[in-house]
Image (cartoon, rainbow, N blue to C red; front, top):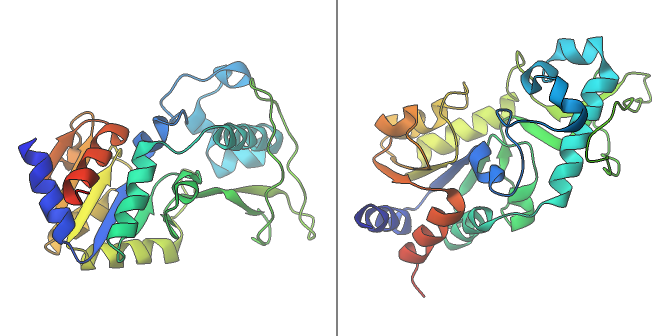
Length: 250
C-alpha cells in the first residue's frame, strides 16, 4: 500500500506521463500472447514461426488466416479495467502519451487518444508489394481458425497484416515519437511488459536515463525491476484502478 501511495503521488504530480503497455494488459481481456497454448488449426504451429516475412512468402494463406483469426478474436473481447484506467490517466493528465507493444485496438476502444503502436496494428493492413494502406474487412473467423487467401491490392500484390514481424524494423516515426516522449516525461508507467523485446524494452530505460520516475506494474519480476523506481506487483486490471483512485481521489 505504501508503494501505491508513493506511485500515486508521483503520478498525480507529473506534468508529462508516458504509459507503456505490453501483452500482459491485453491478456486480461482474453487476447492470447505468443506464449499461450493455441487451439484448433493453430495447435500445430509455433506462433512465432508464423510471425515472419519468410512465413508469409512461403504460405500467405496460412499466415493471413492466422492473423485474421487473431483479429476476429480481438473484436469479440472487451477492454478491461486496466485499459479503462489508462484512458482515465490520459484524461486526468492531458499530456499523457500511451505507447503500446500490442497490435490490438483495446486502448482505442477504452478511450485512449492516439496510442503509439510500436509493433503496428492488426487494423492497419497494407500491400506487401507497394505498401499502400488497405481497409480491414469484416473479421468473422471460426473458433478453430482456417487457411485464408489474403486480398489483393490494385497493384496485384498480396495484402499483409500491418504488424511488425520478427526480423523487421519498428516503424521509424512511431519509435521516434515514443523515444521523444520518454525523454520528456516526469513519470513512465510500464504495464504488463516482459521487458525482453527490443528495441521497445529500451523505452523505460530512456525515461530513467533522462530523470523520469519509472513505475512498473507486473505480476512477476522482470528485467525492468532494476530500472523502476517503484515496482507494483499485480495485474493491470487490479493495480491500475487502485493507482488511479489513490492519485485522484473523488
